[in-house]
Amino acid sequence: MDGKKISGGREGWNVPVSVETGKRILDVEFNRGVFVARSRLELEAMANASYELHYTTDAEVFGQNSFCDFWLVDAGTGRTVTPVRKAAVEKQSNPETSASLSK
Image 1 (cartoon, rainbow, N blue to C red):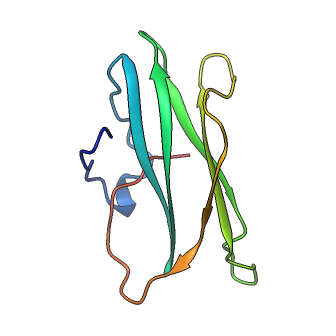
Image 2: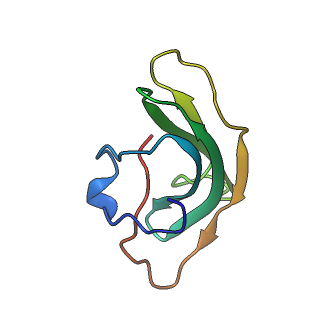
C-alpha cells in the first residue's frame, strides 16, 4: 500500500489491513499454485469505511490461466469504489510467499 509491502503471505489472505483516509495506491496480488497476477488500484479512502478486495479469474485446474480482474467494494454499501483492473496471469517458476489482500 502506497509503496509499502504488507507481509501477510498466503496464510494472511483474510487478515484485515488498516487503510488511512485519503488517496491510497494499492498494489494487489493473486496467487494460486504457481500462478500469479498483479495490479494497481487507486482508492479515495473515506473515514469509518471498510473495503473488500474482490477478484475473478480463470486460473483453475482446467482453466485458461489467462486473467485476473481486481476491484474494491465498500463493505458497508456493496458499492464498487474502484474501476475493475484486468491483469494477466503469469506462471512463476519459483513461487514466493507474498502479500496480498483478501477477497
